[in-house]
Length: 364
View 1 (spheres, rainbow, N blue to C red):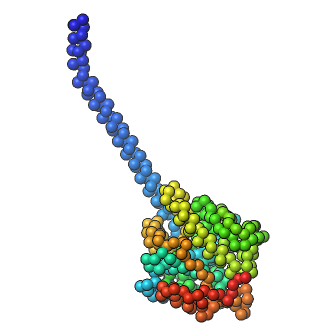
View 2 (tube, rainbow, N blue to C red; view 1 turned 30 degrees about the vertical axis):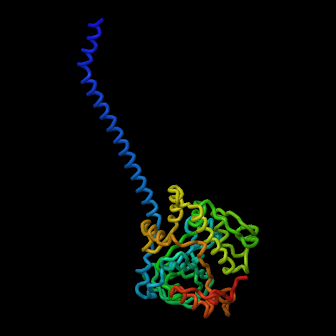
View 3 (tube, helix red, strand yellow; view 1 turned 60 degrees about the horizontal axis):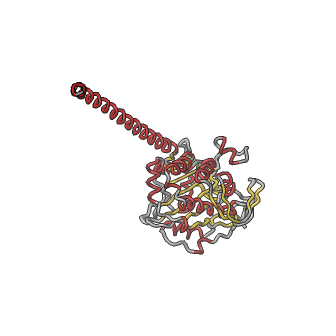
């Protein structure tokens, strides 16, 4: 029994070094496989992150406003904060925009919604001034899309400037009529607006009165309603279902919706989730046109961070004071001296007097 016991120990003493070597080799292979697997995952994740970034970055279209306008612009004052011109375009380009816009025979694009958003330097409040699309303005001399000069014109509808000459001329028109230096330009079309609202999961608005708009099919009773993207687009565009049927009646709805949308994003912390943030960012950027200074994801993100302190609850919304035109009552003109006082307050970053907020034309 003792010899039988010794023999296995003897064989084991010879085989242990080989076994240990095989185990070391096997362990080394396992570690290499694990390391290679981790490396592959990291590379894949990095590639995916780069692809996601590139996709969002590539969504944004840029317009070189500074180059188009040159030096003939209002002075940038030290206390003027940031001024944005935000346009909602009624472009029918593409099947989705055409379907959402209605009126299949309508071609081209106009500035369906226009707001000058003033954000004072380092503060949490902001002011949004809506410019009625039917306002008669003086369009300054501008450079066309092909570089040719387009002559100045008097008494043109504000929303026609976009289709006639382009976004840079809209910026120049706003600067000439207000004396306010526009720092940035943002434009979103029908499809982009709808997709953004759907990506957020809908927006709840408190409808101020019953709305029955046969033209758009919008049928809402007074009170709170959660609207999806298509309903939201109809809500901010309705003009036959509220007021006197003019553009003035719907401006209040547009301003109310803007605040509701901003509050929805902030209160639900929708940007706190990477998946939600990407879905919203993709929807927001794929139909977005900005000035050259914001035409990248990095620039847009940095700008968003710089105004992150703005509280939607403290944002003031105002319609540019207008009066019915004496020659054409279907059009309006800037009411004076209210409009001058309003623009002066924005230029100087001062409080807007109550008298400058009163519009003779109310839209019913």
